[in-house]
Length: 87
Length: 451
Image 1 (cartoon, helix red, strand yellow):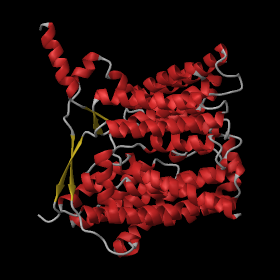
Image 2 (tube, chains in turn orange, blue; image 1 turned 60 degrees about the vertical axis):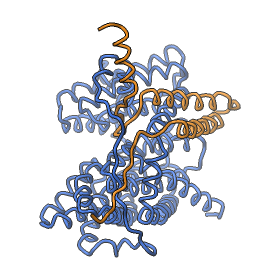
Image 3 (cartoon, rainbow over the protein chains, first blue to last red; image 1 turned 90 degrees about the vertical axis):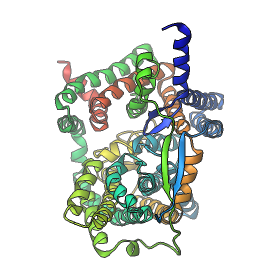
Image 4 (tube, each protein chain N blue to C red; image 1 turned 180 degrees about the vertical axis):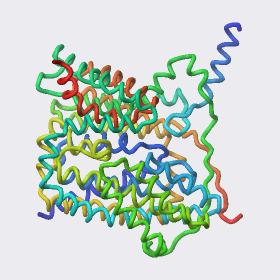
């Protein structure tokens, strides 16, 4: 297999999603989300005034911020279909 | 009890109920992984002990109420504990009755809670005289528990052999941290190791994604197809005793009582066992399914509440799967709570009663009402707008932050190592129970290995 074909295969697979923890996720989005949430959490933790309790609260706020950003920029990989109850 | 404290208890209970109503619906959320870190953070951030208990009880009741929603509507377990119910819920779904399914499950939960709260408090009171004796042998009990649970797993010899090496890994890291001065010698790193075990399976899976060979062999999926059934609206305030018929009420209540007395057993195991026993004789498939799910939901709730209340009130050492898992932070969260100074020692009996009752009542009235009336809307919202990636990202970020807090940068690597080993053990069928017991008994096990 030549190099371009291999890369093409890689590309196609990157577009697909895998299952983690009973739900479907995209690898790239997952890495982005982990990176982002960790950055906001540690960012909050480290900029907080030097006091263990405050650090935690800032870190927690960081996590929430990260979660909100991720929820906005990442689309869930679920497709919903509605079915009428009476068939 | 002054009014400000009362308001605080109510506020934290509402917070817990709302938060875990949402998390409960998200598919596949493991109880330990989602409850323990948040509780831990509240403990460490200096929240009053009595408020922590109210928050925890409210959260657990709410989570147990809502994790049955995705089961009923989409056949996806909302948590580990609701997995046994999928089969029966699918029967109802195939008959076009997901709404009935949700209402029956939620009502079973309510009955489980109503029975478990007073019964656990009474049972705990009866056990108090023996509490100190039991606590004195906790190391031996944890080691015995690890051996016992190991023998109960599918690969029992593998599980048995893994006990000592896993204990060595834990103690090895602790001694390393003391040796290089990452933590003072009187500090025992515990919490982040616990979290490492909890997220082990996910850490393993994520690291495997970096292995090209494994990555290209993973099954690929375009998206998770979920089919939601439209359901009828319900009028007025729901009454669990009207939703369940007499036989269902009696068997849920009976199952809940047994769930309380078997607080030291695995709630998932008891749920499957009692659910089958109580429903297997019924011929009509729909009746059998409704009986099974209402009783099962009763047991899970009762088992969880008793599993947390009895050890914390009577013993002070986490001697039940619930206490060892989701409720860990109430027993051991250094420097705030330690084995000799936790809720068991801090709160009085009346504190326990007040916090539990407020937490349970708020979660039931809020979440039960919302669950029965708006399950479809909530489900649609969560499935549509909350990406699974964000949930995974949040929990990993929490673990990394708490690892850093426990022992600095070196501990992020340490927790990763523990997670990796724990993840492999988990994949081999050595469940959380064995690993948590080993974590507890590790100093004792290693101490006895050196002669």
